[in-house]
Image 1 (tube, rainbow, N blue to C red):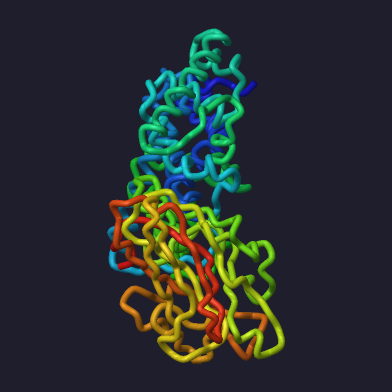
Image 2: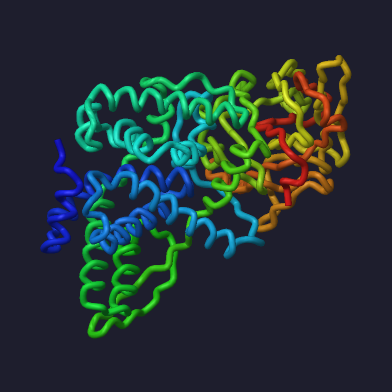
Length: 472
């Protein structure tokens, strides 16, 4: 059993014990890292936030001596620091279109639980403080009910009943927000999905940063603390920096180089998660419709982003692709794709359907490639025609450094990347098309796709129904 937090804090406050502070960091670094990662979705920024949280702990330790456990304080501080980072990035990149082509460090698992992960911290904040602490200690820090009870000054059975009662309150929180969440029980995968182990070495660098901050505060050297914290925060990540700008800092007699990271474009992912949580958009589950799951993408498509992504402000779940038949393959003696795909379940109201797709083989502009049909609960249907050149183009780009997009007002080039498998067609490109729903007040029961049997094949990777105007 780990040493109680209040004893470690007392030891640190009494003699600035490095061992005591290091023990505090080791005990709680996974909680802080996972909390920040759920908020910002960027592993690099999460490491920075984690270090800043433990810097704050070192500076506030004198006020925390009466707390039997600091898990709740660290959870709240991690949320605050994450929101500060998000606000800063939103101001700095408000007008910048973010292109995301990195894998999301995200929880993978049962899709029933995955949409709840971004709301978990908000749900926890609605619990009474003793209840929130009990849930955090048991599910997020892996403590037994006996250990939870000891930390909170209650019995083991009381701790168990408190946690089980909280699970019912959390279930109610999610259901109030429109999620068809099953009842949360002790074995629910939600907490496992929301947990992330801190990277190796982060505990050591966070300890160093915190101790440096405490020492600097004690000596009242403001310039030294600012410089030291920047050095500690960025040095641990220097090995992962692809590019950066060297900045020379002079701190008394100390000179150091601080690398300003080219922050990975994960702000878009955080925005997409918020849109899902606020019911602005919700990606369709297309696993059953794919004929090529993402795991089967060959070398040519190895660069194509997959999993949860946000392109052009539209959240998408990309787990494979569905190819509709085109005559281009028949020309070369081959056959691929289905002539239609019927009954993709929808059962929701929406203003716009955002389709992430591309085409295979060239054809003349304005040629119909496939039909996308909305089927409503009242047996009414609306057919939308996806046209080559207007809504999509072929996935290969042979325009050298210029990668063009469709000409239609509702379609855009969403992503492009290098194709390492074929130097003759060096770039791949994928597109987003906003298909407006003429009857947003009616529930769409399902969607049908029909090949127009043109020379090219339509390839659908993801679809997201939501509010209009997301693409901007």
